[in-house]
Length: 168
Image 1 (cartoon, rainbow, N blue to C red):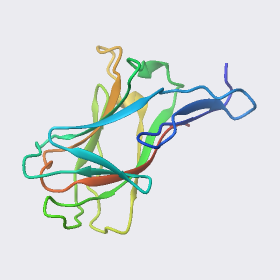
Image 2 (image 1 turned 180 degrees about the vertical axis):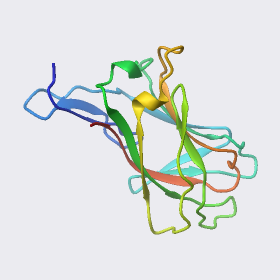
Image 3 (image 1 turned 90 degrees about the vertical axis):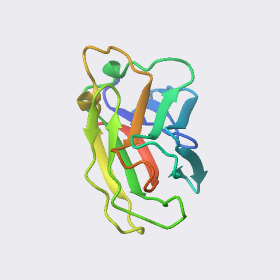
Image 4 (image 1 turned 45 degrees about the horizontal axis):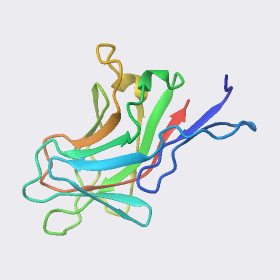
C-alpha cells in the first residue's frame, strides 16, 4: 500500500494523478475528467482558470460538476483524510461586471457550504473540504463532485483554480 499519497485532480487542463511520494509509478485517479455546467452555467478555461459564467436564465442552485467519463468514482476508497482543495474568486455578472460576495457550496452526497466570498476581484480565496464530510453512507457511489451556487446562480459567476484532492 502506498505510504504517502499525493493526489491532484485537474479539470479542463488540471492534472488528475494519484501517486506515491516515493518512486512508485503514477496512476491516473480520474481518467478523462469531464467538467460541465448545469442549471444554465457555462464553463470556459482561460490561463489555467475555470471561468463559471452565468446569465439571467441561470437557476438559483446552478453550478459545475466534475466527474470521470469512465464511470463512477467510489469516493469512499480514497485515503482517509483526503481533502478537496481549490481557490475561488468572484466572477462576472451577466452584464460583464466583476463581482464578489458569491455564496457557493461543495457537494458529492452531502453539501458543505463555503463562507461568502470577499468582494476583492484581485484575490482568490482558499477552500478546503474534507471528502468524508461530503459522503453519505446511504449513497455508496457518486461519479461527480459539484460546486454550486447557494440560491444566487444568476447574480454572478466564479473563477476556480488549483483544484486538488490532497491527503492530510
